[in-house]
Image (cartoon, rainbow over all chains, first blue to last red; front, side, top):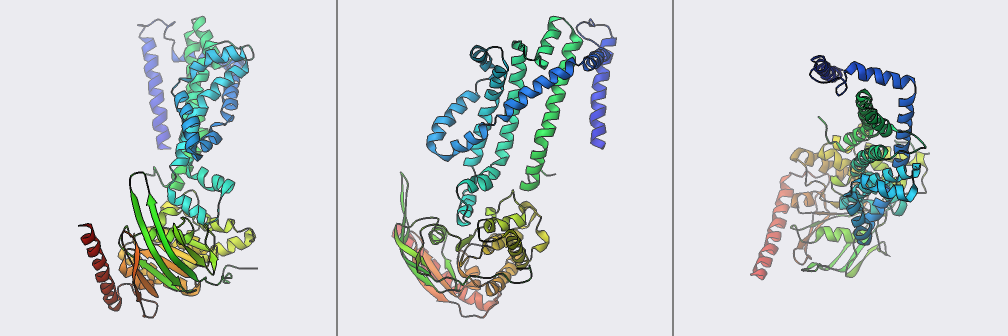
Length: 253
Length: 270
């Protein structure tokens, strides 16, 4: 509770500083709108539904792309043999270094201005880091687990789901988190780049703000993007991380 | 129906025959002769300890008996059956680090039981409860592995390997990582548990005290290549105190013999 208050006080004082800066009159309100103006924009956009709709479109793209979780099984596959490590593994390593926004031109040419193009970019942003993390996790399982597992008669599917996957969970979760961050960034970039007629996402809303020189909209949408990122982190990953800390006894104070 | 206070059925302990085991480890750069012509026999329900300095191949031998590693020569028979791979009748009590951190104590003990399709879930839970009581950890069912002390972890490891009712139990230095007091207590408890749930036990250790405390017979292994050198019968009644003077006396004799082998290998190397 006390920590919550500290957090609230910190952000309120940031907003107060910002407010003072606009009051000073050194910067044009067109370039630096006051917190109240941004709030007003957000309130208006909430009420006319444009913001909600954009959030829906963006989050849907992200979740669907993220849910196409091919990284996990591919990562487990990669860990099974040197052959897959050398082939799929090195491909993944190469493509992970490619900033995922670089997939946008290719996606547009292949799929046109469609939802598929957006999903493709999100999937390409996610899959490699999840794959690599899972493979690393599965490969670095202490050999003693493998021996204990074998003597207790766990093999095949049972071994993969009951031992290898849970044992590599710390890696998998951090890979998923990294994948989420990549996907979120690449989706924003894609939305700013290209207008897709099947839905206006947050990126597009941001871009319109620029075209209209509506700085309150630009800052407002940026705030929304940050808040969604924070919520996703808390809702999707914090429970897993708490789970890991509790079970593995890591990171406890 | 089995309740937690009634004793679950125990399989009879198996007789173990180890015949002419040879094992080489080959890598690109070196070849190591780990074990040479190791031959011994353990009667059903007997407690045998293999003692040797580190690098004498004792853990490899344990792996071979467990079926985790294949010997290059020789064979292992459990009750006349050739050991060809790991099996539930020969379970290993690994060192504490083999417990699964993602499972709590109870689920760790349940792990091997889940792999026995002939049991119902109710029976599995009853057996797990029984074994946790046996090692004195019934209050820690829900605890996670990292919350336990070293001695408690070893108890969980013991319960986990006993629960599926193996006929042979293989132990890998169960006391070596513990402090003196915990060690003494666990030593007594393992003896008591062994008398209640009689298994054929093969224990490997570098710790002579540990060996004489448990064993009916102690086998000495000399290093590079690992060979069985001498056999000591430990005639004392159980339960034995790990720090008792009569054990210390025989431990001294065994230690002296071990030092002798080490001297030989040094000479051979020179």
